[in-house]
Image (tube, rainbow, N blue to C red):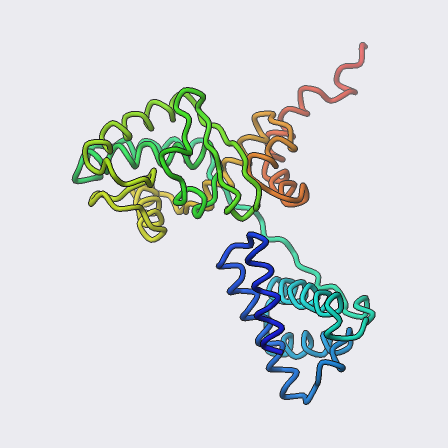
Length: 299
């Protein structure tokens, strides 16, 4: 089965699926193929019952519901590809029971805590160099304004940023697989321009937007350290991805239509964006208090 797995993954890669996702697919599919080999299943045995047996085996190993849900999706996509290319016979995949997954509560930073984080980034005593200080002030605001994933943020190059229009082009290599524009505020623009002026003299030949004190492209480990270090100084616990959650929550609380939030975040499904709606319940309840129909009836 391994050659079929590699052919399928090659097609997925050609369809602009991220390399990290390809590696996840490979790990799940090879584990499924190994299970089939141990059970002496041939290609003719691959059907809904076979996949169900494998998922049952994985459940007995204590695998989480979220992982089972993903494995099920990956294996069924591959099985349908096998049917399409006539490697296996057509089967009834509805036999494979869906895996229920309870979505975890989305954690975001409150407006007050966000102000403390920004204040920590603005502190002159945090960094050894002016480049580092300017970068930290800009990057915290940039993450919250744009809601970019860490991978998208670190993939940006100078040419992706339109300083005049305050827009950022996110390439189709991102998780959403579609190029999109995101926006940032005037405050973030001022901090970004200050950082870029400082950056220009230190590493004029590096195309990456975000760089280290040594003038090299920033990596995830550095980004994670910077955000977590600033959060500790502010007495918080946060991460780059939690700032993405914060962007989504605040955009919704500030009245931006959910379809616009979906496009900014790069979600392919609206249901993914909807998980942020519950985070806005507090403000929604407060606004409702002043708009309840019965409270406005004339006596």
